[in-house]
Image (tube, rainbow, N blue to C red; front, side, top):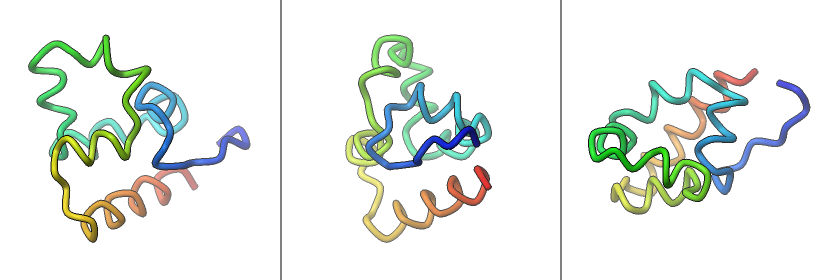
Length: 75
C-alpha cells in the first residue's frame, strides 16, 4: 500500500491511485453519476470520499460499511 494513510478525507483521485478497486465499489454511491455527468475529471482532485458520500446522501452507518470495505481492499 506504499505507506499511504487511508482517510475519508482523501480526494477521489488519490484514493483511486492507492486502492484502484475502490472505484468499482463507489460506483453505486455517487461515482457513476459523476462519470455520467462528465464532472469526475474536474472534481476528482478536489472532492473527498466524505464529500462524495455527503452529496450522494449515503446514510452514516452505510458510509462506514463502505469505507471498511475499501480499507480491507487496501490490505
